[in-house]
Amino acid sequence: MNITVLTFDTLDSTNTEALKQARLGADEGLCVLADHQTAGRGRNGRTWISAKGSGLYFSIVLRPKIDSKYVPLITLMTGVAVHDTLAGIGLRPDIKWVNDVLANEKKISGILAETAETSKGLAVVAGIGINIRSSNFPDEIADIATSIEHETGRVISPAKLASALTGFINYFYDILTGEEGPAKVLSAWQSRSTYFSGKKVKAWSGNETITGTTDGLEANGALRIRDEDGKLTIVHAGYVERLRQAE
Image (cartoon, rainbow, N blue to C red; front, side, top):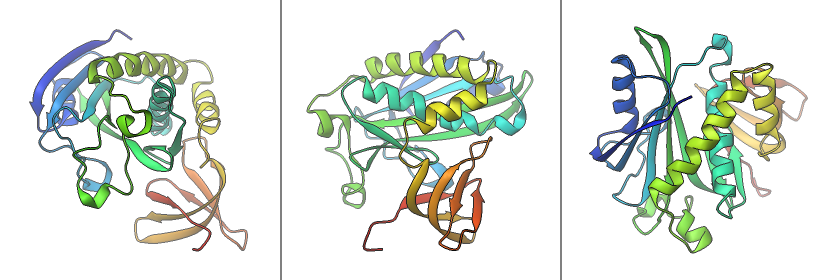
């Protein structure tokens, strides 16, 4: 995959711009970066805080030639790439199903994958936000989010972070789209996430709340949760939170 980077000072959302470029025929590997987002977004319509110079705001256009049932694995593949990018600068990250990367159990990165039908076929845009500084965090997330600066005492430039990240995305995307790719991506995710198995969690999926212990992933990346009675629930989309001992 050839990487091409478009850099903007300000955008409403790098995902919105990348989706537009995909519909206009952009090749796979187009990356959109912005120093500031005015309408950054996460999953389920949540806002992604995107202060100028405080994070990496990044989206990449992918055109995967894989069975449609494995498209959800792009989020997991991207999480693995983010994990290894952060590990490379001295952090000990963890991946929380399905789209968060944590450092010291606080959110340091979020991933939002969105799809679009284009004249060249299906495009998937993987959007990634990584907190570089935490000085501009609003009070409501200060206790649950962290940054590279807070964890390491160093500030990494968005451009340097993006360069490392695109290398890992390229590497793991080649794995995903290669022979036995889905199984290899699941194995890579498993080895980097404490949420794969044995984690007591509460999950919200649609109108359902599920409490239990994680029990691995399905072949398409869905999370398996087993309750105290042994009942297994498969969560395809939703939000997961670790249960503390007191809970």
